[in-house]
Image (tube, rainbow, N blue to C red; front, side):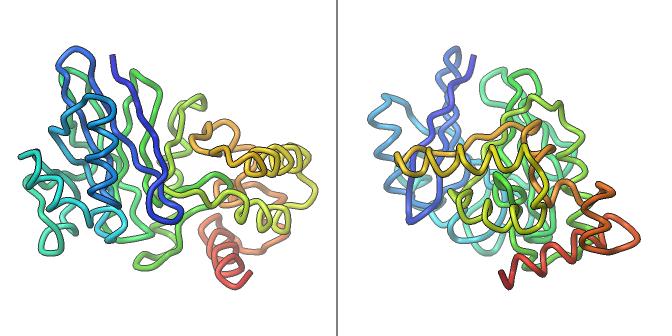
Length: 251
């Protein structure tokens, strides 16, 4: 059995520790703040044995060296991390990684960066998606292309609808404002936005979210919906996605 410990760090990141109760192994999913991760692990009585990076950005891999120095842990991640931050094992789409006997599959979710990956624990119904998709949003397209990013989002869309998506940032309130602009007639979205406002008013996290809810409300995951395509143009979903992403960048 695994337990996920989520905690805020930096200005708007979330940190995640995944602990296997049988083997007592603990995985740090990304490392935005190495000292925060070490402190949280100590509070839980866990020892970090692995780091799994989703992509190379410093607010996701910047704590690798400190945590490895303090714990001797093994670090794995996509090839793009190598040469920027410590990494011991390169993984790519379709690879299987384990914490104890619990398996996770690596999924290519490139677009935010060209090597971005996610980790899907199928038996546990959870996925750590980094900056590929957020509650009501998706990552900026810093390195990728629209067709590539849409293919990545399509791989996320294909996961079981009840999958819990652990996104790496608390961007949801801001994302909700754009989503309402992008899809103003979506009643489910309007209800979701009201719930988000209530949660953030109480300083409660909006992460994780369910894929089912995002499929119904997240405009970036709905770029293949006829109503969205008509409103935002594009003869193919990746073209509609590109229009949405450009609009969000300037919103």
